[in-house]
Structure formats: structure tokens, C-alpha cells
Length: 259
Image (cartoon, rainbow, N blue to C red; front, side, top):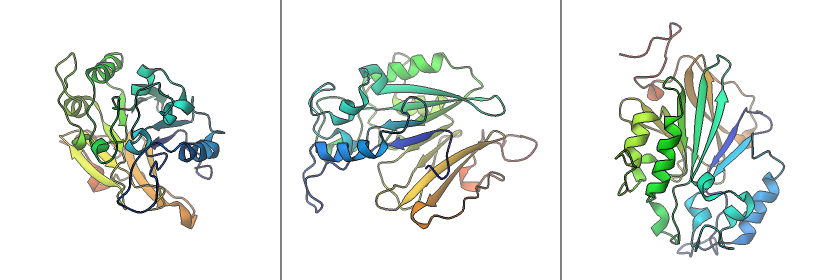
């Protein structure tokens, strides 16, 4: 991260392992030492403007309540409950376009142990916070959803005050979604409807991959690299790779959207 020096950095969960041993079958429970190792490595980064994190299911195994002593993600972040559910990071690009990053944690308490926390079941309160934030954003601005879980894994039993579940909100308003959870060897590109491109990123621990996205002349391009090889970095931003094109994506110098 320091060698690339990105404008913003995001970790989309599973910051700690929270397993009692390395071999399976295994029991998932909060391990304070795991969280302390992670935060000792990262506490010199500015979490108010440079580094942003979401919790993963590993970080939330077996938490009794949001403010309980066993909620180690919260112990280090010290957020309000509302800002834990949703933070919006607003950023202005070089062309003066605005991008709004929705940093989301769709958890409820008490939380389950593995494997029952594999699927998120978002609360109505969580959905309403998203709807309220969307209402304050100009229509031409870009919105990027970031959370640990891919959109297709959400159990959409609750609806917001506007009558939409999480999948409907994401597919309606977000331009891009970035998640993790599945730990694929390479990033997986999923098209949610006509306009939403979701990327399920590869992970640092198992596959030694960092993932980087660029905005260049209103083109979003998602890249990945193997950080263990320490290559020189060159990121191609035009043309946009075919698998990353959506109906709303710019793909040529004339900035003409696909029809």
C-alpha cells in the first residue's frame, strides 16, 4: 500500500481470523489477540481520511451486543452504532466528479458463530440509513458500495421505508460494489442488472493479492496485483476490460455510454 500510495484504502472485512486453531473442523469465537495483532500493524494509518474498514463475518463471530466487551472490532474503532452500520466517504476526482463510498456493516446482535454468519440479514434500520444517505446525493454523482458480503448473499427479508430490500437498493443506485468474503484466487466480476458492476476481491492472506481500482476520465477499472513479487506498477485504464463494461460505463475517448 505504501509503495503505491493510493488516495484511499479500503479493507472489506475479515481483518482477524477468530478461529481457535488452524485446522478444521474448528470453532469460531472472538480471539482478542488476533485483533490486537492487526491493529498494532495498522494503527499508524489515518482511519478518518486515508484507511477505511468494514467488518467481516470472522470479525463478528459470537458477539453478544454491539457494545459488549467481546466486540473487538468496535473496541478499536469506537464508532456509534449508526456510523458502524454506514459511513459515507465523499471524494472529488480530478475532473471534479464526486464519488461517494458507502462503507457498510450489515450485522445484527447477538451474532452467530460459523457457519451461520455466512449470510447477512440486514436490519430495517440499516436499510433506512442507506436510503437517507442516497437522498442527499446528486443524481449525477457516482456511488460505490463496499461491504464484506457479495450482493447475491444478502437474505432480503427486510425492506426499507421506501419498500426496497438491499439487492434492490444496490442495483438501483450503486454504480459499483466491492466485496470479499468468498476469498477467490482472482477477483470475480459480477453484473447485477444493467448498470451495477460488483467485484468480489481476492485476499491478502491466502492468495497474496492486493486489489486496486482507478477512476480515469470517468472510467472505472479494477486491477489486481501479487504484492509478494514486488513488481513495478503500471495500470492500464483505457480501454476498459470487456468483463468490466456495463451499460453506464464509459469505454472510449468520446465518453459515449454503451447503448
